[in-house]
Amino acid sequence: MIQSIIVILAFAIAVFYVGRLVFKSFQSKAGECGSGCGKCGAVDFAKLEQQLKQKGF
Image (cartoon, rainbow, N blue to C red; front, side):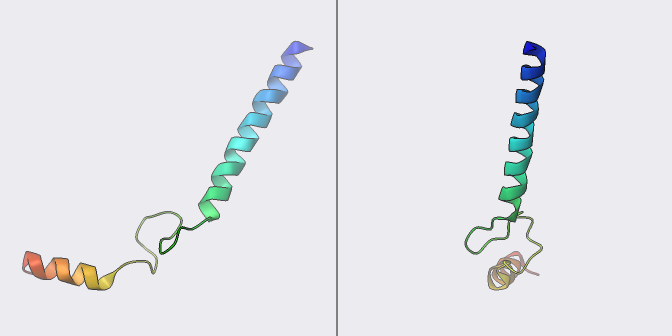
């Protein structure tokens, strides 16, 4: 009986944790995409151009 309760509780915690991760992955911050990888339209091209000019490219 107690073992079943512990297993169910552990499973519920795991489902909550995974659900929270999935939910957060769909939330975006202001001006940023959710993953932060830099592949989306949130890239500041003017800043990149300025950095490249400073490096001599």
